[in-house]
Every structure is written in structure tokens, then in C-alpha cells.
Image (cartoon, rainbow over all chains, first blue to last red; front, top):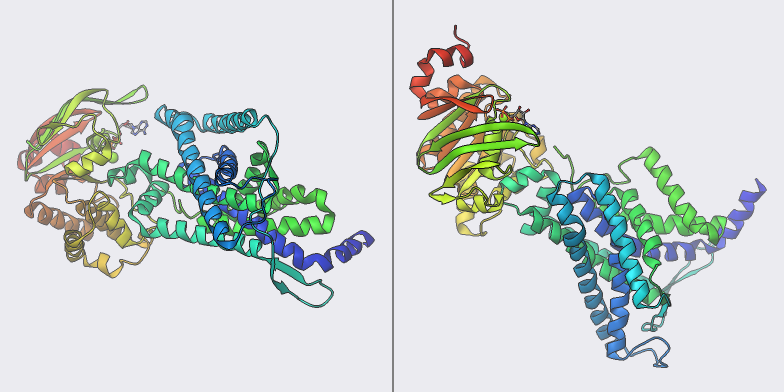
Length: 329
Length: 236
Ligand SMILES: Nc1ncnc2c1ncn2[C@@H]1O[C@H](COP(=O)(O)OP(=O)(O)O)[C@@H](O)[C@H]1O
Ligand SMILES: [Mg+2]
């Protein structure tokens, strides 16, 4: 009993900070989770290479920032607001294009040939893992396996303080944290609108719900699949840029754990369901930070996966269930 | 002939489902394809729509060889199917299902006019246009499947067992609408197990048995053919 009450005493004052940090981290999980969920909704495939789609995005924005003249450790002062907007825009566009392109390339090179041969599902999974390792190792080779620094583009500034009172310490919320969470919500909203309002979105949902009938209505399945990978890649690119802003260094192997967490978030929220990816990401970030606050930082990853197992025991389809492919015939 | 099938073989893996079938559908006709369960009727329909590639044989549509054409191109060319089991997108609204039928077309006044036309043909669908397709009754789903196919403005409408699982009154209503659709200028290839209804409506018909066409003729002729009566009309 003493153990738990001690832990509780450690946790309580930091509760506000943990919630803010958890939501920020969760927003990044959510953005990556969108890619897992979109592809799963259409193909029932867990695209394990999606972690590397995210990875290449992180490098893309750093490279572009370097071209513009901002590299880590170059002694540049933190740029003025106008420059920051330019840098963020350029970084996001570069990361999204590179991530989106990589996602489509993976689908064309690794999956499309298997689909044409009607390969069993297990083969897709092995191919996905193979593609993931290949890309990560390639990036490792190109960077000599050394980490890259990320230039400091946005000085974190406290915008407001949440003061819940009681024995909880006031929690400052920074511009960066607000930006990251808002970006995730905006990105999710754009994707959701695209899926529910546009003609191509209708096509994606049709293939997710009933592939054969979709083909009978004139939906080109190959094109829908490419589009799905592209959309997931674009979201991963946004996630990659936000991740850079939050983190000081990156290296070729960061995709693995982040990808696994994002995949967990997608399953947690209900894989195949866009809203589920958002909810799952935020919940995962929140819970793992609270768990780390309670049990200590080294348990942060364990907490994430224990939560996953517990939720799936009670709700096998995740928190919100499967909806992109809802009521598959 | 609008549609011509010559010597078509279709396989599922090692199982051969169609053995060199040939059939044709002329412009403005209602042609029925009847046969027992498992005869290969749906496989024929899938081959015409391009969901199943034939191993040998040829399909031409409006004089053009479409044997290797992608399914979506066939829809653009003017072939649309209301599949067996209806294939309703149950998570989409009724109206979204109808828009799926028009997936290959440009949005605009013409499309809206066609939507109104489908709603006129099936007033029930209009009442339920905001409801998810999965909440409709069997009869309504069949109407939705037909209406959806019409939204593509097909030259050739393929109907795979539209009467399946429906009450007799609804069956009569569906067949009435099929005649109306033909009279408005759409050619129809109709697969049915309900041979009585199909043969009495069709201009011509084919009888299929275990992957082969065994008889053909006008609907009226087949209706009085003793072998057909014996096997499909439940009359001794
Ligand atoms: N997906 C499939 N895989 C293997 N065999 C199939 C498949 N679909 C149909 N068949 C077989 O092909 C034959 C024809 O089936 P089908 O065209 O559905 O007949 P019908 O529509 O006349 O009832 C049957 O023997 C059936 O078992
Ligand atoms: Mg059938």
C-alpha cells in the first residue's frame, strides 16, 4: 500500500505537466496513426513500413531547413516570426512530399506486385517489415549512423498556465505544444472532410466497405490504394516536422518505436477509423505520460503496451471501433 | 449486337466455372439467363463486368473488344451491374450509394436530373436518402442497387438475381420497373433463378447448366419447352 501512496504523492504535483506533455506527444502519435488506419481500412494491411515513411519526413525537413540556411549548431539566433513561418511551411511541404512519395513508392514496389499475385496476408506482413528495415538501414548508411541535430526554430514560450489548484503544480503551456496539438486536429479534420465530402474520398470508403462493388461502380482500386498511401504519407510528413520542432536530434532508427506507438494508438482508437486514430493517439500519449509519472520514466513504453492489451481485452475493436470499413459484407 | 460473348472459359484456380459459353444481347432487348444454383450465371456477369478475367474467349461490347479492359473503363463504356446480394455500401447513406453509381461521371445538372429520375422511379429511396444503406429492407436495397446502377447511365444494365429473397408482391414490382427501364432505352441482361418471371418478361433467354449454355430461344418458346418446364418451372 505504501508503494502506491508514495507514487501517488510523486505524481500528483506533476499532474498538469504530465497531461500537457502527454497530449503533445499524443498529437504526434495521432498524426502517424492516421496512416496506419487509412491503409488498414482499405487493404486490411498493417503497413509496418509506415514508421519509415515518418522517418524520411524528419530528414526531409531538416535538409530543407539547411538549404534555407538554418542548421543545428550553426550559431544562428532563433529566427524572427516571418522566417519561422517560411521555415515551417517549407519544412512541412518538403516532409509531406517526401513522406507521401515514399509511401506511394513502398506500395508500388513492395505491395502492388503481391496484390497482383493474390499473395497470402502473411507475405504482405513480412514484406512490410522487410521494407521498413531496408529503408531504415538505407537512411543509416546515408547518415553514417550518426544522429543529426535539429536547428532550434521556435523558442518554447509559455502562452498560458493551467492552474488546477489543490496540490497540483501550475502547468505552463507553450506555443509549441499548442501548435502541435492544433496541427494534429487540423490535419485530422482535413482528412476527415476529404474522405466524407470529396469524390475520391467516396471512392476510398467504397473500396474499404466492399471492394468488388466498388469496382462495379467504376472505382479504380489501384488508384484508390495509391491515394490512401499518399494521404497517410502526407500526415506522417506533418508529424515528422512537428516532431523535429519538439526534439533536438534524430537518427535513422527513431521510426521503430514511434511507429509501434502510433500503430498502438491506431489499434487503441479502433483501426480503420480516422477519429479513432486521433482519440487513440491522444489517449495513448496521455496514459503513457501519466504512467511514467506514476511508475517512473523508464516504464513509459511498458505502460503504453500494457494499456493496449487491457483495452483490447475489453474492447477488441478499440475505443471507437472500425468505421472506414464499417459493416463489411 | 450490343454485347457478344464468344467461347468464354473462366476458372477459379483449378476449378473451371464456365466452359466455352457464347451468348449475345441486342440493343433494346431484355435477355434472361436462367439456371440452377452454381450453374455459372454470376461468374458470367462478373466476367462481363471485368471482375473475373476469362482464360480464353472474347467479349465485345458495341463492336469493341473489351476482354482485357479494366472494370472501371467498362463502366465508362456503358456497362453497369447490380450484383447478386445487392452489394449495398451499408455505411454510406442511400444518396451516397447513388452517387457511387455516378462515380465515373462529372457532377452537374445532368447528374442531378438523373438522381431525380431515380428518385421518381423509387420514391422510397428519396424518403430514405439520408439513411445508411444498411438500414434498408431487402426490397429497398434491391431498388437501391438498381437505382445506383442506373446512375451510371448504362447502355447495358446487368441484374444478378434482383428477385432473390423478396416477397411475391415486391418481385412483381421489381419486374415492372425492369420493363420500364428497358422502355426508356436501356438494354438489360437479367440473371434469375425465378425462371417463370424472367422468361415471361424476356425477349430472349439462355439456359445454363454446370458452366455451359444448354438451350436458348425466345422467352415465350422456353416457357413452353418441356425440358425447361420440367427442370426450372416446377411443372411436371
Ligand atoms: N470465388 C470462387 N472461388 C471458387 N469457386 C467459385 C467462386 N465463385 C463461384 N465458384 C464456383 O463456380 C461455379 C459457378 O458459380 P456461380 O457463377 O456463382 O453460379 P450461379 O451464379 O449460377 O449460382 C460454382 O461451382 C461455384 O462453386
Ligand atoms: Mg449467382
